[in-house]
Image (tube, rainbow, N blue to C red):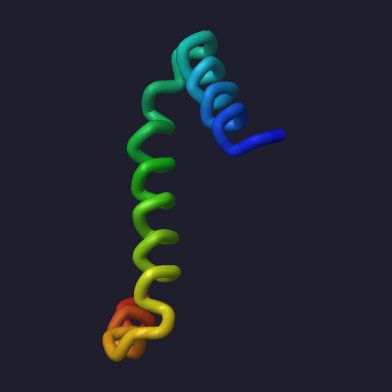
Length: 52
C-alpha cells in the first residue's frame, strides 16, 4: 500500500463521512512531525524539544 493511496483513502473518508474538522488536526500533526524530523540533527534541536 503506497502513501499516496493512504492519503487518497483518507480524503475519501473525509468527503463521505463529512469529518472536515479532522483536517486541521491532521495538518498540524504532519507539520509537527516534519518539524521534529527536520530539526533532529541540527543545533536548534534542544530548543524544539524544550518547547514540549
